[in-house]
Length: 273
Image 1 (cartoon, rainbow, N blue to C red):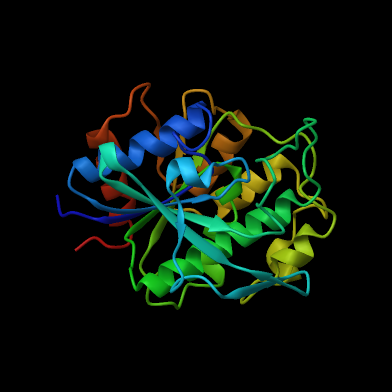
Image 2: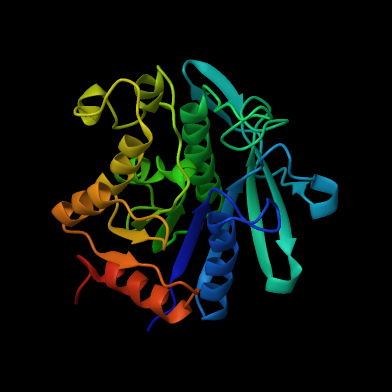
């Protein structure tokens, strides 16, 4: 099997945040895939409670400095990087003073979900893709883990489909047990509109995207779906089956061969010789 370039866009990763099913997968799957012989790049948000000094994060000046316009407002994109020495793995962090600095993940210190979680996901998705372009790196497979990465498949297929970095990329979305209880923002649909994405693109979705709708949008524009052991959702799985995309029920323990074979299966769709 030919080595692939795999881009991991994850919501959480140990040791930078507390352990959870998603955070553990965010760490273990990229490491296992890299050790299996594939080339990887890994991204996550720079959540406000990540200790930069302890984790030795530093800004990458050559990648920072771009402004992303969301809801007619400029938001500076800051890129930081750190290394997990034991895994020989480098991690890129997407940062911004408005969306991530001094702020937790989905909920604040009082347990309330942020009103702009949708905008934060949009900024994260576009921030990752713009940074990968600057790296001049073209991934074969893009694996999106967690709702924070759910916008990526739409942008890959609609807004970045002609970009050399992503023109041939296949996108896989992973369902996990994490769940938002509130819609992601009253102006989310408007903020989503970007190159190639208009109001017509989002027909069938409510004005205030629910958590399930966010995942449905991700699946609609993905080439494959991975379902974690506690991420089962009968409705979303049925939707993926209707789209006739490959589905992998993730093993209880990370198995690089199983994931690698699934990546190959998804890659071969439309690329058969």
